[in-house]
Length: 107
Image (cartoon, rainbow, N blue to C red; front, side):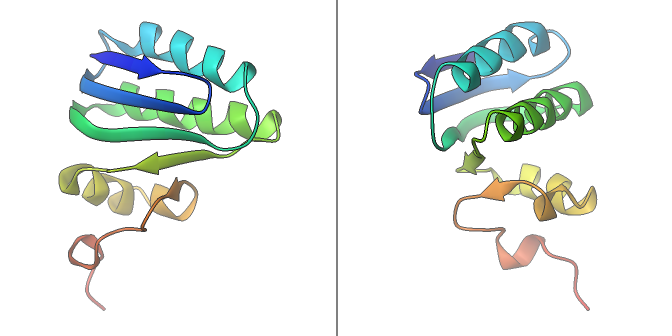
């Protein structure tokens, strides 16, 4: 996993999983704490995440809220969009452009 960027936009790539969670948490918390306004996470280059990685994202979301900021996900890959829908986290997290219609459950 690699993260590059600043306190306004971070680009996340590789795998966000149990092995990379501690490093990712440190970088995300530092970015939240050092900036203002929206913090955009560009996930275009993210290959996969597991439950631990998703927990890191949710922790950053909560921390951003406490700092009067908003965590915004950009470029969420389709398979990860499906996970957000299945866990109903797409209702809580700010996702730039929303969730693709094909990932939403059919009514």
